[in-house]
Length: 122
Length: 501
Image 1 (cartoon, chains in turn orange, blue):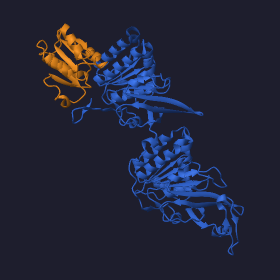
Image 2 (cartoon, rainbow over the protein chains, first blue to last red):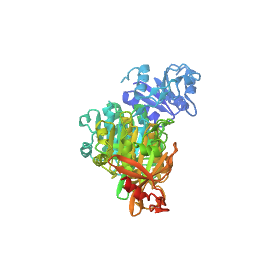
Image 3 (cartoon, chains in turn cyan, purple):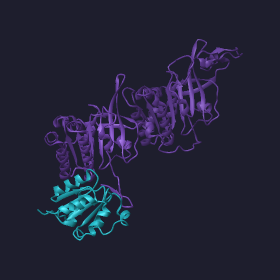
Image 4 (cartoon, one colour):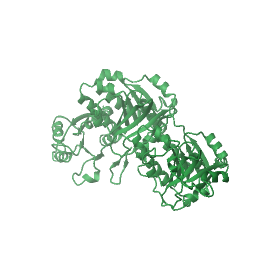
């Protein structure tokens, strides 16, 4: 079963993403900021990171940079979520796998995840 | 689904309710993917509103889910809804589902309820959800924080599933409840008592992301479901069209009155005719309508005399209104001032004017509006908005207003400030002179014309209305009791009138 690490500081978003992806057949691990996500990565085999951009402690751009700088995590696909249009953040962060505009719809999330990971495996 | 702006950011799209007045108040409908509380005491109309929104949504191709907690039994609810014209039984179990979630709430708590709702929405592709009985969820919450988390969870689900949610609750003792701060909108329904009469109203207390018409708006529940009437002065705080600067004069329908008015009435103006009962106000209005034509369609909007009586009166004055009605140049609308809403009346009036492109309107009995309002404070802004809108539509309006005293001085207009918002003011009076009553007509104001300021006799006969001579050699006519000042060689006014007859 593929594992998705959902990183979002906003109450409710992490919960609903966890519910949607779990219902669809993925395993989900959640974190509330970039720093927390790095701790979660240490104890889990993660196949995809689905991360918000604007978060306290460590934001999504810093998390992505940290992953890129670490050989263990550099190849993990990174889907960035943000309420700003993608054109507004491209000068801050480059090289991520996909972009999800907030507020997103269930199908947008599932499409983005399936496109990267394929359908969930048992 | 959200539309995209040019910069790629999503734009909020609307979900019309199908309740025309409510959509106007909300500037086009609810925002899709929003979560709204509909609150009100038992019997206020929440369940009907919830159902009506669902049926309209499925009629437009959407899918709706009606979830009850501790609310009306489904069978009873459907029996009650079956009386409504929006109800379509064939939609049930096809595009509209009714489910009860109370057992889940009891057994699994708010988290279980949230999961159920999410799965139902996703599984059935639901785009409108009504949760009836939110108060049961609130009472089952172990703490206020847990209830707020539940509402937040619903809100997130509404966004990600693009499902618009309505939470119906009778709670509302507190002015502001925690859930009010979290939802996208709050609509309050109430049913207030005014003397023996009850009037329902709807108040949008909060509506994120959009302009809306603030304040209270009356509504009624009929077999058509809920009909909402935006408060006229709020809806028409500015007229839908700027009034054109008119200089064209149109006839009052009477050559002698045109002469007295300084050439007729300015097109697009409003004339207020004030006088006691029987003084000739309705007749003056009918005379004005007798000049209606295909180019200038007319409307008689009356309250106290049924259409048949209006036509009979027109026949007795030889005004030919019956033929104008038959030919489609004049429409008669009778609205008995019993239990109606003033905004519903304004809506009917303006709808008829727009539909028939009416150019001559007679509003016979403005006091009906005053009688039906629930707040006297509303009357001046209400009439200002109505008159401005009629001006904007290029309508020349003749409005009558009854004063209570048959004889004696009129201290002031019975509807405050009304005379200031009309361009023209005509006063009709009874006057006693030499043991006889006469009808008197006087032009008090004609904003654009040099008018005849004399007090003249108003004559009503088989050939309609005629403005007669002035009352020579008498004074104090406006007190209602004229008295002679000097006997002229040719006799006094009463003698002159008798000779002319």
